[in-house]
Image (cartoon, rainbow, N blue to C red; front, side):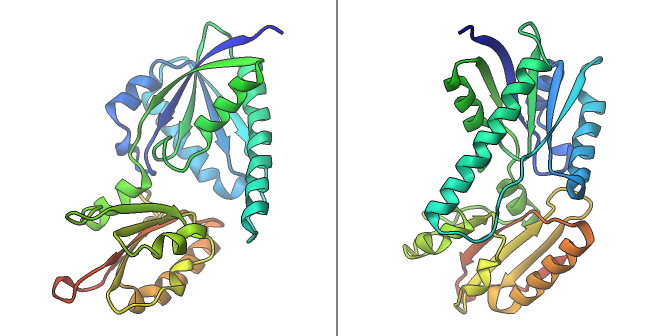
Length: 269
């Protein structure tokens, strides 16, 4: 079997603010001829539009844009084994789409690029899927990674707080594993992919939350304060935002704040 060679740049484009493109990302955009944009359906067409605007401003001329439809995925609550099987199935179908696109939509002499929200190395599947494709043998992607500003960095910057406290670790976890991490009670917790508002299950007088949604976009929402005081407000904002946009992307930092360090809750809807 002949293995086709493809040059691929995986470019982190930040959490949503076009100004968060790094100089490295801009230079990478100018080196690629074919851009693969993974769409999330009509409800999230604004995400596709934003990436196209970035390309219009920074990419080389001419270039081609290939839109790929993200395969559906069951996101209902499941046990760990069912969840893992569901993710594996979704990644396999995604790999099929990526592989066919690299074979059909670009040549070995061209450079292709995937535009990835945030940073490609943090809770994104693109690098793993490209590695899976390479293991199949029909396409051998030569992958270059350009890091980006992650949603985590954007979150703490917008709240004007450091990510870590002195001498303490930071745990980054999907919501479904949050309580496993929380048993350690050593350090702060950044929670991602929380579709079920797991923060409402946390108790404690000195637990603060720094929450953000649609970070870096005109629809950005920010709330911070004692979790016991602002949890209901965050829940309502999530409901309103989902009704308005049809989707929501949010993340938050949980931190134990000593009484003398507490300050007023804040919100910037």
